[in-house]
Length: 157
Image (cartoon, rainbow, N blue to C red; front, side):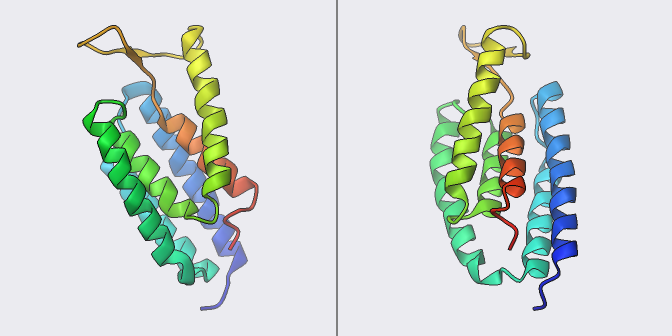
């Protein structure tokens, strides 16, 4: 496959726009729609096709599947929402093993900032009915970390 750098960057820009949408809707409604996840998967396939990085797809799929199993455990214990599990899985499909560390560091930074903002009342939270815990939308942190991974050039393929 011929590497098409302009198309690759265009797909990253479109993906960033979809991630902004996912973050915004999660902030407002605490929901991440399945169609948004599917669009991100299609964009991943398109990016892989135009960037010529098909050789790493099996590793990306395996890594995302492995982490999905772990995330389902957190979901079953009500520590993550279903939309967060879906979005994190797709984000890990994008970053794969090669870019997992920069993504994880960025995710830690953005999630910490968001948690502190929520603690001080600068960001919205939602009370859980069963106990005194509060929840924050996780999609903005995941989206920011994935976009940050794009910006640092880890996925330039």
